[in-house]
Length: 249
Image 1: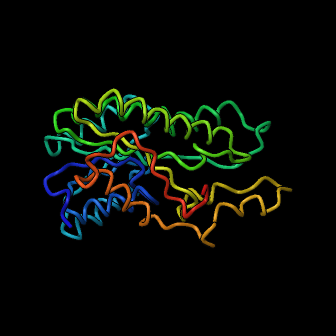
Image 2: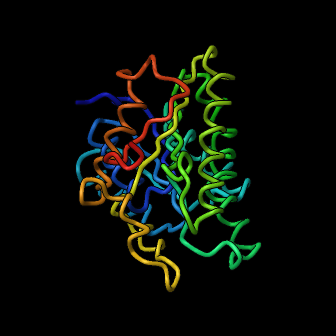
């Protein structure tokens, strides 16, 4: 399929995991992919892989919690190819910790990246997406829909992404921009290693995360991101799409 021929896609968190898999998927389908990540080398590695496969890609370092960095990144993507058609917000952080042990700095950082970061990129990208009648895919988590122990900050941030998406979808749907939210379950990514249970908590606490007996693969989630961004999903707006193998069934 070449569903994104001639279209520009900006992806945050493109250096690894789901973001990288989505960037490669968009590139394989003909998209011009701008890869953003706080790790500049990883973002460029993803962009290089797309170019090596015959696609078009560029990269930039971006801390999505920094308004100035977001402005520079979005503007660079538009300057590179003239227009912006898709924004995929994938950058995120998290981890398990007892709530009484969470520092204010940790709370602020998690919300800053996971929630404020998606607000900032949406805000900066929307004027360009209005011109192209484009699409936004925000990445939340099943942790934004169902309670999870030992990750209050993460749950709060991802629940916020779900409602941010719904609010933007009804504000901009009539103006031609579709905005949807993806909620993955446990996926084999570098971030998964951050979720180590506190000492003394039994592993049984994680059993419901793998109803298929395994974690998901980034490529299994990337396909859904590409679908939501494509013309195959033109009547989907304000939706919360769960990709979790049945975790919250």
